[in-house]
Amino acid sequence: LEEARSGGAGGAGDGGETGARDGPPMRSAAVIVGDVVRRLKEKKKLAEDRADSIASDLQLCNLAREAAELATSKAQKSQNDARERRAFFTKLRENIAVVAEMLEEKKMEIEQQSGEVARLWKKRGAKFEASMKLTLAVLIAAPPAGTFDDTTAKASGWSSEGSTENIFSTGSSPAILEPGMGMEATRGGKASAANRRAAAVSRRRALHSHRDALLHHIRGLLNHHDVTGAMSAISLENTQNLFDIDDAFSEDPRDFSEFQTRLEVIGERDIFNDVEFEYSSVVSFADWMAEWRDKQKDSYREAYGTDALAVLSTCVVRPSLFVYDPLSSGASWTHDDKWWVHLVKYGSSEASVGEDNAIAIKVLRRTVLPILSHVLEAGAYIPLASLEKTQMLSGTVRVCVHAGRNSMGAMSDEDKEEFLDALCNIIDRLCETFEVWVAQIKDMYSTLSGIGKANNSPELDLNIAASCGLISFCGVRLTQAAGEWLSVFEPLLFETRIDSGLAKLEGIIIKRILSDVVVRAGRASSLALWNVYCGLYPENHAQGAASAGAITALSRSLSTLPEKFPREKCGGWLPLRAACARLRAEFNAGLPQVLENSLEEKLTLVEQRLR
Image (cartoon, rainbow, N blue to C red; front, side, top):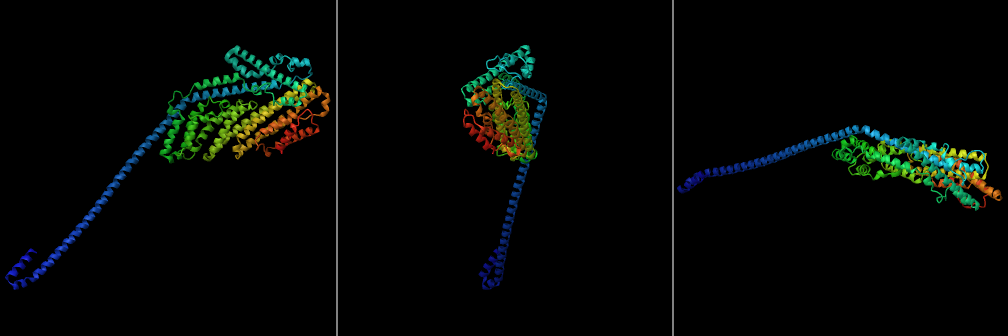
């Protein structure tokens, strides 16, 4: 370009010809310049394209580097997580191994204490049963067969003015207390046995004084033509001013105190007192499983973590319940934050999975329900005792039933079957308990019925009236207790097995208690009392007799049963309908003027319920 410019300038100075001659080189220079510019632009574009390519490659390299760093981080995190999981499961296995080893070491001690508690409950049941049989034998004692004159009455203790020494300090009565006396003699020697015999004699005398007071009260009412009041007294409706029937039918305070003392001694020997809290606490076990559940829900579910927690908890809860007395404490364990409260919270938490909602029921079935069944089997529960005792025990079962009912959806089929098995076992024990005491009072009634047919005297009729009235009252008590139990299991009536077990209990109530005891004994007490009144006032004999005792007792019994019970399938209504028809016939045959017309209302209510 410089050459072209210099050549063009020289030609211009030399003349026009030279300039004309140099014209083509100038055009060539322009072409050259154009080519150079074009090549520069091409190089620039190539440089720009290459720069873009380099930038793109650099960006890709940066992305690749970031991806590599992320992969490295993930791999590192995964490696750390795996290391943490490995450490956690290693620690969990070690903890469970320590618990298993501890339980193996404590096995003999646990079995020993379990055996002591079982024997203690059995002795308590035997003592309470003996005490209750003694109470019945005294309050509902059968007069000696044969002639029953005033001398015999005084000598035997049946007269309200007679001595109580002979009948209650000699004979076969002390043998009733043999189980308790034998144990005391072993522990305390002859002095303890003598003290116990003296206490038994004192109790028999006190019970006999109760009966004397009742007979004296009835005599006074009859002398004042108050037959209605006399029949109410016989049915024990208005006798609290004479004596406390709940106290007479209660467990001997000395026996209960001894039981509690020995139970406390067992409780003081805490099996896990030398074990660290971490390896002997439901709270600690739940924390282990909660951490597992939070970290690995799938493995927790697949490895049955809920069942594992239930087994671990059962192993430490069961020994802690050795000192549990459901007859006195009720469902006190529902407030125990050492296991029940904590397990309920564990199952109801937002992180719960699978069967966690049923974890408390799993432990309950393995710990509390067997205790309740054992108490019934040992005979420590007697339905003739105060309704408060029945409600204390039935209330505990009621809590279990409701808790199980609410957790049915979370239970597996196997757990559900085992839970129902435990409840059916309790129902079976209840049926056996009621059968025993129904048979006891029926035997007494049979003896009294035979004596009443073989003898005829006002004093004998009065005693038979009182005894049959007490028997009818016992039947009412059994009905009240059974009605309470029927209502306990009502939430599970849709379960066929529970329904079948309750039908058996209903049959005992209707056929054995109401028909065979309440109605018959109540009718016999009314008729015997009316015979006494007619003997005192022969002019009233033509008015006939109404079985007021049977009507009153049947009315009270039916009023205690739940509305849904009993059902027709147990076939129990038929004998009651027949008995009620007989009572109605006797009632219509001639109601004594000295009886109040309130019996009509009671009988009508009974008939309505039977319909």
